[in-house]
Structures are given as structure tokens and as C-alpha cells.
Image 1 (cartoon, rainbow, N blue to C red):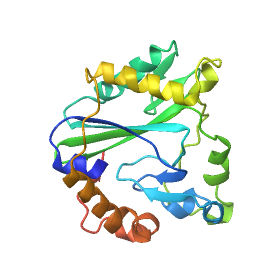
Image 2 (cartoon, rainbow, N blue to C red):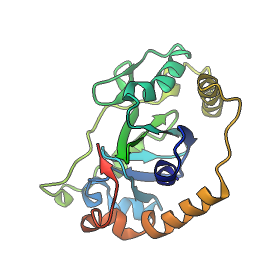
Image 3 (cartoon, helix red, strand yellow):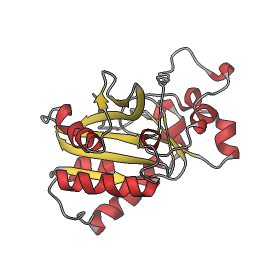
Image 4 (cartoon, rainbow, N blue to C red):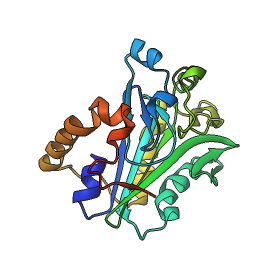
Length: 232
């Protein structure tokens, strides 16, 4: 859906979404170097390559993802400001770090990535609310013998869940709802817009012919065949 909205829609888009347990790898990463393939197969965890750069991340129902699609001329700071200021409203000392992460007390609670297509920018990231952090070590630490010399390895950072800093004042579902409400207020939108039937159909088709294909995720040789997506 991100790619469809990036390439066919000319309006600004801010989208919140969640994934079932899965590993999302950066466009230029070698999946074999980033995940423990035996572990993910045994635990039915999907691996998907995204169109933006950056490192591998783990998604589950304990984290919330955001996508900001806008003009390439809009500064990155304008893209991250709604989320950063919304978090600060919870009295969280959230900071935008030099690695394009959001940190609280030095712990990374959100990582971001971006790509550019035809003067349009996709800026997206994940927000750790109550994710299973133990899974990061299980999934994103493959056996040493599988590492290759030229892989773009993930940056291993100290990570934390937002709920850890809220002293039990919210459950995961309560915080997610409250964050959504603050973001909608920031964008002056009382409710979410509908994604059109045509956009849904196009996204389903793109998933079938690209993102669900093992060649896209696992075969590095396929990445530059006919692609019009460029990492910033």
C-alpha cells in the first residue's frame, strides 16, 4: 500500500498500521545475513523486504508503524515532528537522534527509513510500545558462519518499549488509541480517510507479484531489475 500511495497518489498521506510477527529488512540488505532463517521458519515468522534503506526490524502486535508520504521538498524534520511532539505530550522526554531514531533516556523506541520516487518521499518507521524485545535477539542474530563480507548489516542499538517509561499508567491498547488521537488532532483530522477500492486492488496485486515473492526478499540479484525505487 505504501508503494501504491507513493507512486499514484499526489496528496500528503499519514498512515498508521500494524503487522503480525515479521521481520522487515532494508532494501539493500542481504536477508541471509540479517535473520536466523531456521528460527523464523520454525516459528512461522514472515520476512519482507521494504523499498526503503536502513536496517532490519522486528514487527509484532506490540509495535505501531507509521508512514508519511509527501513531497520530497518537505524537510525530514517536518515528517517526524507530529510523532515527536505527540510523544512529548505524554511527558516522555523523546528526542530525535542523529541516526534518524527517536530515543527516550538513551533507548531507541523508534527507527525510521525513507526513499524517494519522482519527487515524492516515503518516510516511515516503527514505534515500540509493548513489543517482545527478546525476539530481536532470537531473530536478528543469525549464526556467525552465515555472515558474508559485503552484507549491509543492521545497526544493533539499545531498544526499549514506551510502556516501560509510563509506569503502568497505560495498557498497550490504551496508549495506542491515545497516540492515534493525538496524531489525528495534530493533523486536524477528526477521522481517517478511506482507501479506495482501486488502491486496495492495486496493493493486493503488487503484494502478489512483488512483495510475497521469495525472489524479492531473498535474491539480491533481482532488486535492480526494472525497479524505479531509489534509496535516499
